Amino acid sequence: MSFTIGKQMTAYPPHATQDISGAPFLTGGIPKVGSVITANTGIWRGLGSLNPKFQWYWGTTSVVNATNASFSIQSAGSFLSCRMSFGNATWGTYWKEVATGTIAA
Image 1 (tube, rainbow, N blue to C red):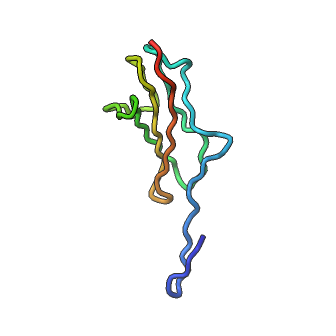
Image 2 (image 1 turned 30 degrees about the horizontal axis):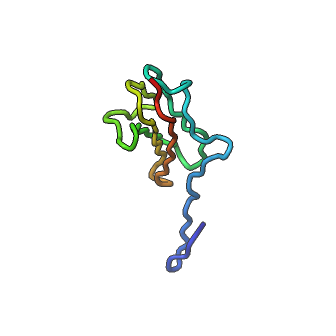
Image 3 (image 1 turned 90 degrees about the horizontal axis):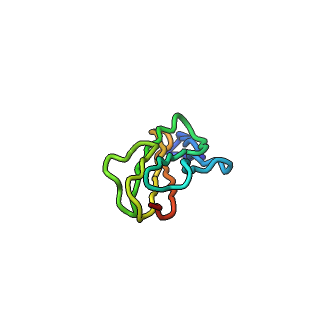
């Protein structure tokens, strides 16, 4: 996409897009107490590196210092989700969230 600003043509790079064949997903088997769940970013297309960041949530509350791709489940009762953000200075920041069902004991 490009825009004319005064007499100068300015081109803006396309935004990052998620490849439909590679959506983010969780691995680690059945989410239960004692298991480790890992968030996989899926396949993205964009300019530059992705610089992925992770934040895990227990129900709707963020888990303090849970910012790695993997999460060790310590208790049962709520659902677990991971918000993955991707971005850089060239094309901005985008995010996707993936979630489990209720954690079993």
